[in-house]
Image (cartoon, helix red, strand yellow):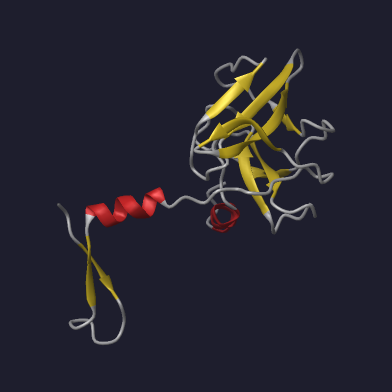
Length: 161
């Protein structure tokens, strides 16, 4: 069992708390769940077609030059669970991610390290980049999971993209 120290301020020798591996595992189990998500036109993309850990999934329309289908992803930030409907994922392929209701493409937020784009999914009906989460247009990319708005801002500021 490894031990990490958390300094709580004040006199350091008197205010320490031991953080165990079990504490770290419990922290990672506390996940952020997206409870609202919209396209640029304000359509909700949450759907109970598929449930992930009891939460409705985010339904996205995927399009390329020859076909289109749906991708339903977990609303839990960092969870890579997903279901493809009428769409076969091809390794390395970049797809357009659209609203399943109005087929409006989601706007580009930034460039992904895989040379595809990160698109913005809005967490309020007002399509504003200050309230968004992101996902890569390349299924299978290391960033093809939901990224929180905090992570998107951090990556942009750190020039990771």
